[in-house]
Image 1: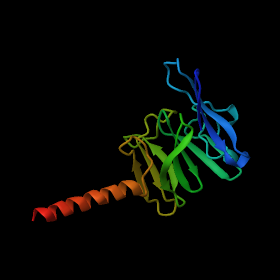
Image 2: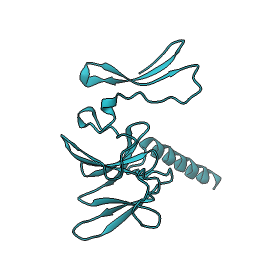
Image 3: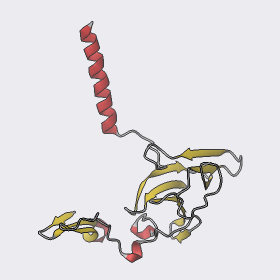
Image 4: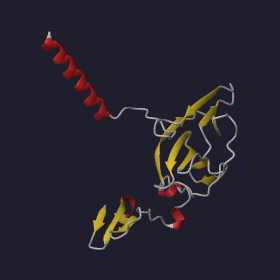
Length: 184
């Protein structure tokens, strides 16, 4: 929900499970030249399963973890604005600034997660800025799958093509085929 007036604008989230209660997520005066900064209550700055999957504090280290009512979540710093969470047998990438998940990196199926630098060593920087890849190791077979960063510099994967994009691509292909038939 977006509200605005002569002073600026506010962005809210509607909590439907709490009778439509509004939560302020972003507030920016029109006169400000700085980039908008998310407004997040202190109690939501750590993972909280009861409030949804929220990201962690910026100062979390590579080995920080939090026990939650829905299971254990382990957080891995993987860059200046990237946190990876092991939760529900998935590796999920979170954007720290937005405090939101951006995509699934992998379905773990019991595999262990470790982060490595480009040289294959353990990351030296606690913020994960030197992380180049994620290693997924099967504990029984010791088989290792290496997940490199994607084109956007993140780790998440697209498991299903956007249906709208796929439909438009199919329409272009059909139009090109029809144009080729007309030229014959």
